[in-house]
Length: 433
Image (cartoon, rainbow, N blue to C red; front, side, top):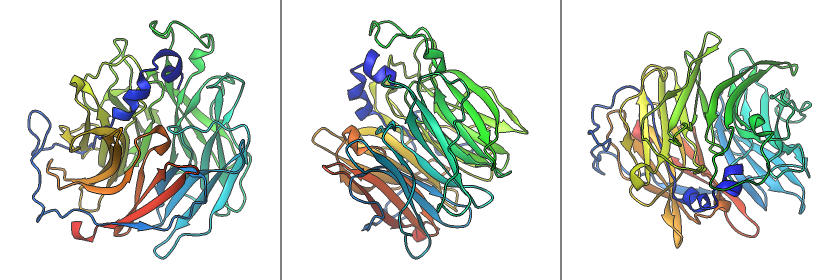
């Protein structure tokens, strides 16, 4: 997050204008040379009917995350303000009938709480839960560590938090994506600022950073043992979210890269047979920008099918894109532009059983915005967008999230206010079967 304050104040505005969606899975035969596919007619692909639902989150809640479990449930996590200085990470689990009562993972007064760098709770292969949150490690604004804890009893009790990075520098460590590894460990991908430890807090805004943020990975076993810590990319965008998923061939992570010429396109790395691949572009947008747009990609995977969504402003044209892959992300089809104008980014993506995908993003202007969702098929065609909710485009509105539970897709977002509240809604996707 350093770049957004000390180097590029104007990126505060750009982060509102960024929305990118990319889906990776095989070729897109319906795509044109510009990447825009023909629209499906409304009668062939009806818009989703969005229904507001009661949220399990309490008052003064924010920063939701939604994850699906392998046994057919979903987990909603969020940050709740307890006092002026104290925050808690809470979560609830949803089955086909209802939400569970909210439970607390952890709380503290020394947390790093940020609209774009939010915690999560996931279910692991052995049935346990894992959660992550961010804790200050020093007096610097962006000196904070990743904390990962595990619960073996469904969230009633949590073990001692583990820090997955071993550098012990008082620098930024965040934008975490957790992975439920098949062997029962929890994998973590994060953006790491250890190489910034010798950089002064303030410097010439026009001068490039002498060193860069990196992308790193590590795994934690059930006993808290740390293994496989490795650098995945030596130079990445400073404050864009990462996203990771499991294919039938292993883990895959996507993130915003940063070239030495300040091109910040979406890249991927894959882990197969214990080894990570070299970074490779999902698509060459060639978006050259001298600061972080605070708009990371999203990835979803099912067996060998992969979908990646992202935002770009290449050519001074704000767009949300998606690509598909049929080979676990080894290759990607041509991109399809998903948004219907005034794209702002903050995307999420999920795969549907029929092979299509849902893309969620924010759009709007300073006068008002909206959270939208649209179905996209692997052939590049797509139906009409649906409005999930009207919202503010301010930072405090955060990033909308979604997850599928049977024939229902659940949405969660932050409704900005004093206090703010995590809101939820659902849409039935039975018509898309």
